[in-house]
Image 1 (tube, one colour):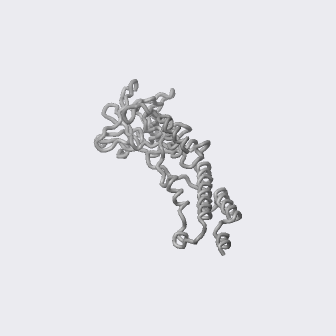
Image 2 (cartoon, helix red, strand yellow):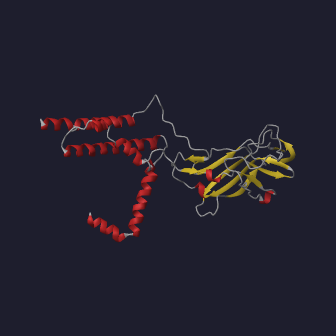
Image 3 (tube, rainbow, N blue to C red):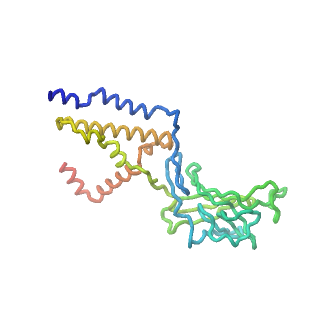
Amino acid sequence: MRWLQRQQQAPSLTSVTALITTAAALLIAPSHATPLTVPLDPPCSATSNRTGTFVDLRDLIRKGSDSNYNPRGYDYNTNFTLNICAPIISSTDLKFHALPEAHNVSAYYLKGDVAYSLGDASTTPKFRGRKLVLEYTGGSLCPKLDAQGVPIEGKDNEDGFRKGAILSFTCDRELIGPATISFVGQQNECSYWFDVRTSSACATVKQQPLGPVSIFSIMYAPPIPTLLFRVSGSSQTNKFALVLRFLVALLVYFIGGCFYQRTVLHARGWRQIPHWQTWLGALNLIWVRRLLFPARWFAFRVSI
């Protein structure tokens, strides 16, 4: 009878193979009913489709008692006022040229007593290749051009083209302060370019609802029937079942994670590993401890 009970408790090789094959088939098979969708990024942040790099610009938003950004125009003979991912602060007393609604203006410049809008606020930065940019559109009307393509002072174009601005972000970890914005140039007094150097443009770890520990806890936790109705058996069989469940959970985690990272986020290389930022941080911590405490590390290795 004991031999029969052990045989009933011990998982067979055929069942294990079937479980692994089924899990792999569910992960690899294309889904026609519910296509995979990329999770949306928070406002004022972006994830690169090429590298999976996540950048969060929300710390650059000026609000409340903060002051606007004021990059100098130098040879353009005027300075600029702008905000990032939000409207400028205190714009109610300004008179904007050829702009019906000015409550959402995110960048402008003054010429005399008239303010010229460079576009409305946008909270959706995006990657163009490896470069992160933020676009403002829908500003004041662009000036009319003469036969040589030179803007005519005091005349607006008749085609409805409006001013806009492009903010290009550059990672600078050594910068003191939130950001340094420089005016790069303009074309036909219609399109304006700015360079934003900030540490907020550097890659960071995107907050995920479940980390590796949580996922393994869910996958590796014993089912409720097992907790309520424990079947007596040998300790060797129970250990084998636990190890087997852990290996299956590990396989599903890595195969499913790599499949998702590659097909949905278009990650390549070692970035295909699920939660690669967490594993990289753990490896860096182990490496730093090994460099700082070589004697302890050696003693620990010898004791093992």
